[in-house]
Image 1 (cartoon, one colour):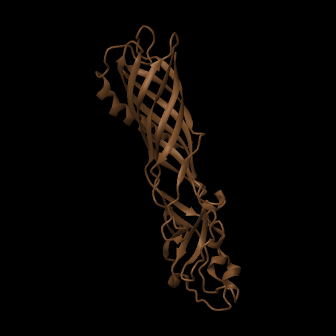
Image 2: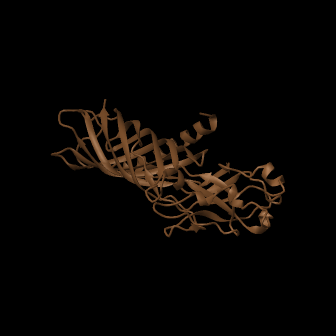
Length: 318
């Protein structure tokens, strides 16, 4: 990890401490701290394992444009609910069962604790409406006629040669033809998101049942994530909010917890995305292959990322 990343993580840790510590310093109600030692001493350490059930998401509409000079991106080409090529591309996503993390933390004072957490999550394309996952991943940027510089004739190859939307289809339907006005020439594969993050979290714990040693917890965190989308990775600041209930296991220093979690990322640009299948110099320079067409380079894609769902896990106190 470079010096820049270390500075961001150190800064988020300080901000989180300053933000949460004063607000919960006197908020703890009667009862021992959920991560405190038997004698109620302050400063104990705990480790925890977290499972993230990311069942819902707020992933925004994909937007983008080619980086080639003089090219105007008219729309994102995909498939809509009526099985027709559509200008707006907004696929469905689903969470992966392999998502979670681990943390180490300590109680700062009665009812207030802080932890350092590492986590991994994966959001996949939902392909249930398609014949295959391969086809559900298919995306094209659509150029307009003017910026492509192409004219169609009987001896010219259709531009979909380089990015054939005709290869895409939903279950039990015939692929829709691409009109010649759709000069889609930049093909990508959307395989979803992979996310690896380091977070600094702070919590307030409130006793709600002495009999069951049950506590309500509320918390949040800041950190840094490495997010991969369209085969491009970038670092971005991340945040999360949590709330739930924890219970002590009988005759054990461990507790179990479950609740709601929201995780978001600031910034939505993925630069220099490369086409899966590009227009080559040979295609441009060949007499019968649209000699005026603009060569594929890279694209800048915008897509926001946020997920929410259920978090559950176990915490062990030392």
